[in-house]
Image (tube, rainbow, N blue to C red; front, side):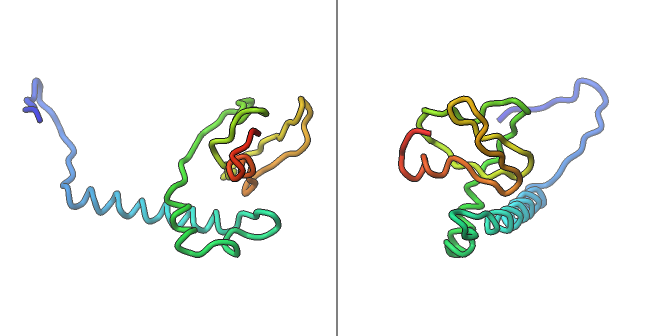
Amino acid sequence: AASVKAEDDCVLLRIDRTTFRKIVLYFQLERQKKYIGFVSEVSIQGKKLKELISSDQLSQLASALEVEYRESGDTIIRQGEMGDFFYIIETGNVEIIKDGAVVSELSTGGIFGELALLKEDKR
């Protein structure tokens, strides 16, 4: 901890611990609800995720998701690399490229990377 001393006249904005924690908790719960709704509609092998796993598992999955931002043209995964992540497209479009040729395109709700992750195999 440290002391803080005004060097000039200041106008400060402050928030107390209780209010801050309530706000953080509120947004965590809102994020959780949003991602549970989103991932429950994702299809894997022709079935929606909400048909394949329990609501508790959906909740755990939603809590574990991390947002990753990518720009147009970024390579997200490379063919031949080991699979470390499973991706769900929240917004945007991606191309699936195999041996240098585009074989598929995916958009919102699309998934990729699941097979290498499940089988601990190369992409």
